[in-house]
Length: 152
Image (cartoon, rainbow, N blue to C red; front, side, top):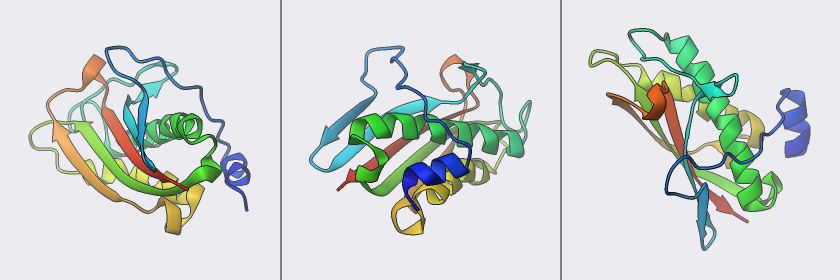
């Protein structure tokens, strides 16, 4: 099954690349690696605001991380000239806006990690990962994720 077929089966339409809100670019390619800048969680086109462990549940955080993964795929598709040109999702770094006592950042990040495996399969989509709890994320977003991918 092609990647586009998987996206269609999952009901996913890739968004356009978001315009950066500050002094950075959406992605940089060096050699076969593409570094995708951090994308914040959005709901209905606005920052998905919340703090895990206070105003946002783990399940909501997972949904936010999945939404970010879809945005990241949109940027990656442009950077790679199509998702069929992706050889491997190499690394995901997730920042979770959370209280000092919240400890399920890894479960929140699964929302993105699991989608990458659903879209690409385990051979391409499984990746190294870090998940951090942080005091705040730009615009009050509940999750921010960045991605490194290898191109064919």
